[in-house]
Structures are given as C-alpha cells and as structure tokens.
Figure 1 (tube, rainbow, N blue to C red):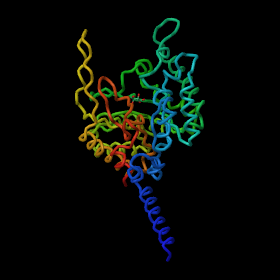
Figure 2: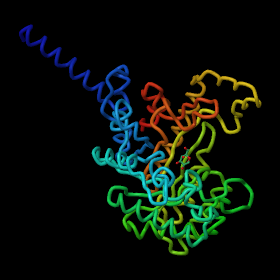
Figure 3: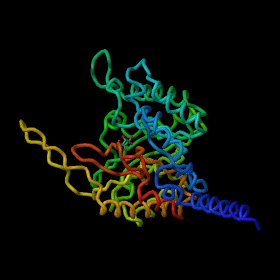
Amino acid sequence: MSIKRLLSLIILAIFAMAVYIQCKPGNSMQASNNTTLSQKGLKDYYKDFFPIGVAVRPESLKGADSALIVREFNSLTAENAMKMGPIHPKENEYYWKDADAIVDFAQAHHMRVRGHNLLWHNQAPRWLFTDSATGKQVTKKVLLQRLKDHITTVVNRYKGKIYAWDVVNEAINDDTSSRFMRNSLWYQICGDDFIPKAFEYAHAADPKAVLFYNDYNTERASKRDKVYRLLKQLIDAKVPINAVGLQAHWNVNDPTGEQLRESIEKFSSLGLKVQITELDISVYPSGLPRPAPAAAGTAPTPPPPAVFTPEMEQKQLEQYKMAFNTFREYKKNITGVTFWNISDRSSWLDTRGRKNFPLLFDQDRQPKKAYWEVVKF
Ligand code: GLA
C-alpha cells in the first residue's frame, strides 16, 4: 500500500471516530465542549414516550430562546397569553396578538399546543364578575353566560390548532382542612356548577379537544384525594373530561417517588390520561423560609447572591432523575410532559427576593447536569 493511501485511510478512520463520538447518545453536546450544540433535543430522546413541552411568552419566540425551543421541545403552552384576563380584557374585547403568535410559531415548527386555561380564579378579569351598570357582583346566570361566550369564542378560534385545553385550573381547596372547593368568586357565585358547565362549553366548541382538569400539590395525600373525588364526580355525571394535569411545581425533596406513583395510578384508575403540565424543580426544599420582607419605612435588604451550589445541583439532578424514570415507567398513562419556562435565565419562581434555578437549562441556556440524567436511559 502506498504511503498516500495509508495516510488517507488514517484520516478517514479519525473522521469516522469523531462522527461516532459526536453522535453517541447523551454525548453529543459534551463531546463538542458545549460550543456546537447537536440538533438532538429532549423531544428526540423522548420520541417513543411523550411530547415534551414548554411554557412560553411571545418574546421568547425570537433569538436564542427560540432556537432552544425549536431544538428541544415539540409542544408549547402559553405562559399567560391565553388566560382569561390577558386574552379577554374587556367584555367586548379580545386581545389575540400574543396567543396567535404562539400558535403560529407552533404551527410553523410542527409543534402541538396545549391551551392554558379557560377558567381560573387568578388572572381573571374583574369585569367578568361585575355588573357594569350597578357595579355589583353578577348573578350565577350572567356569570355562566359570560363563561360560555368566553370559552366558545376562544376554543373556536384555535379549533384544529390547539389539541388540548386546561378547562378548569385549581378549583380545589389547597389546605389540609376538610374544605373541598376553593372559596373563589366562581364558587361563591355559582356553587360547584361552574366546573361541569366549563367542560360542556369547551366540548361543544371543539368535540375533538382533549379536556383537562389541572391542579398543583396533587401528590400530597389530602389534595390528591380531593382532586380524585372531584374527577370521579365529573365522570359519574358524564361530564366530557378526558385527562388530568399534574402541574408539578416541585422541589428537591417533594414529592417522593412513591407519592408520584400513587397519584399517577390513582388518577389513571379513573380512565383519565395524565399529563405533567407545569414542571419545574425548585432548588429550595419545602419550608425553607424566604428572605424576610423589609420592615415598614426601611429599604428592602438586597437578595442574597444567586448561587447554584454543587449541593443544589446534585439534589435537583436526583429529583429530575426520579421524576423522568417514573414518567417513562408510566408511558401508557402519561401523554405529555411540559416544563414551566425555558431556562434558569428567567422563571416565575424568581420572585420575592430569591433567585431560583429550577429548569434543565442554565442561565447561558446550556444543558445542566440534570439534563444529561434525564436523557440517559
Ligand atoms: C399556576 C398556573 C400557571 C402559572 C403558575 C405560576 O400553576 O396554572 O399558569 O401561573 O401558577 O406562574
């Protein structure tokens, strides 16, 4: 063999080795020293399991965030843009721009969209509950008619583009008392009738949409039992509900794997599909006090420096690993997993004087160690 031929063979072998290292599952980004990112994202690792989604704001749909979204996710949720207040600020006025932008982006990138949400006690516009002539609270009849108009209009607009809706968000009482329903304005005005009605209106507007009840702390026994009771009542009454959303705003030690399994099994036993709809894992354990608010008349103390410590990193990685091991194990029951926000650059948990680091991408939008645990299977 000529020297020239030998040299070309050696070069070819080196090239083949480099391609192998680059493409080896779980290794692609590390091998490239975090400079060139592989095109493989969470959605690809999980293609045989369930779609992987993310909650977004319209401003994330351009630049570096948008590139990350397209590479990693195949489902979108509007963080705020489809909630009653933002999308329907006045009785005769809808604001579609932001919600449309999210749906258009999803369509352009072949992603699905979960609609969030059609009824919630928070971020609901004041006008909804108020009689504009008298300024007094509206009657049940008026409120249900307004709810029907709202749901029909919003669901109709996105029919065929939004495959699932969180119809009712957080209607169950959240303390450990025996109180069942949250004492919201919805409840005060309508009793618990607003729940079946909301599902009926949504189903009438789009019979193909998958309809969810969505709530948090669903892994805690007392809340889980109440949510189960509500879901069973709805099913027994033949209300068109198809699925339950476990929000999954968790932290490094809550919930345990056992609590999570119990919830998935208990809700699935009703014949409902389950989705993880708002996943993030706070690095602060339950019960850790927030920085004290400033005393009246004094300047607020600046928040402590935001440090993602190796201990936080390790605990969070273990919790993410437990979560995704469990999700994969229940792939027959789980039809989607959505993260609440994109990266640690910005999370709804960065509030009240405390920075958090709850997601799989760091503040430079690079995958964290927890990411590699989640895709290692
Ligand atoms: C709840 C809602 C979400 C979001 C989070 C916090 O979980 O369902 O829409 O508002 O609170 O931001």
